[in-house]
Image 1 (cartoon, rainbow, N blue to C red):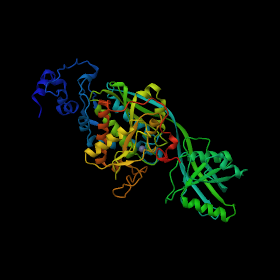
Image 2 (cartoon, rainbow, N blue to C red; image 1 turned 180 degrees about the horizontal axis):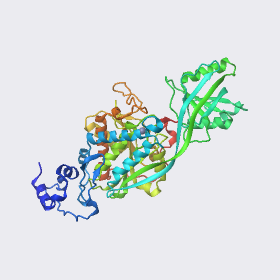
Image 3 (cartoon, rainbow, N blue to C red; image 1 turned 90 degrees about the vertical axis):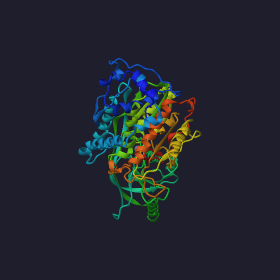
Image 4 (tube, rainbow, N blue to C red; image 1 turned 90 degrees about the horizontal axis):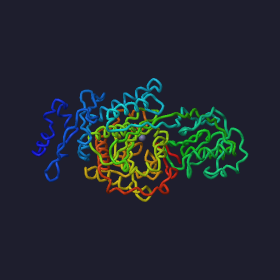
Length: 541
Ligand SMILES: [Zn+2]
């Protein structure tokens, strides 16, 4: 029911007289809530409609993904100040679903080159993803500034990695490390490295190293890239890193951004490392294996899209991010098509509101290659821009099929002050809506890392990757980094709740940061990347 005051307000605003100029009512109601103009004591704010040539008054026209509807936008000063419940109510299943289907069609643009849909950096699917975001948000150019930040990223592809014994028997579970260089097949002498290969001294007792030697190194203590570098410096041609914990399969590790300084490096399970060590012993240090890695690493330029509200206090910036790229093996609709769509949807709906603080939506690239885009962006912030950024919220994988509501377990001791408040905002939301949530390690697996490293408080939520759902013992996302990460892989219940929570987080902080801890003087960063176990989806140590 509309209050009488509200009706009076409508009349005062001269809406009836301008009826011909406004679109049909349902769209009008979406962008405008009369109760936002009614004061708490029942009085109301009198406002006039602007001149029709006011830039803010122009409608956005037809949106290609909302073919038969068009948005009416009030001039900025007439917009209601954003409120969480109101912004949340604008998020609909229908629009999430349409966007997910659109994004899958975009991933299919890579089919010719890759043989299947993908949105990996450098692919047509990825560049079309960026174009799609830009196209949708440039319709709101009266509300947002869009900037593009190009940067160089490394992209690697491992086609195969094999080790066979001289009798022709293969080692069963060899996995080429991400960003490993390739090496032509060769017969090499396997040498066990004492200690963990984290210092060049670990290799020195073995000198001189003969041509075609293969270093067998245990996982642990330092990044895989360091071990590979040291082995190269010591004269080895390639390396095998075996797990230090029991796991039936080999692990996914990355050498990191160390082009030219590493050698071909593969990962094997602990059991197979033990098998190699036993064979070395049995052969009296004369174990030879055939070793081959078919892989390449290349440098390509890709782009972060930064979308920032024109209005709002520029000294208090609320930022949030999702990654636009996927892995090579599939379309990446949950990872992180879902987060990308959530941000896009919330950005479109936020444009119907006035805000007190500036909001920055960061669509970052090359997350899957090691959080490259977000790290590049965070490092490129000037000291002033850094200090004005009050917080960063990371939204990666919002709609996992066997989801849990996961909250990154941030705190104000190990992480910049404010990180814990962000965590509590998510927890309060899930609890107040009657959902269970679980805390997951804040251990470097997504784009928040670069921001923490430069002192910006951060947090985020996720719905789950390759881990196990603790409620039912099954994998959270059975299609994680697989070809089947398509629209049918999304759980739309989780997608809706999480996108509404994102709307809540944006509305809350865009409206008011007075209870949020002030930025600490940017002293020593509280966390450093090397303390993390992960860099994106890959283990680094
Ligand atoms: Zn992701």
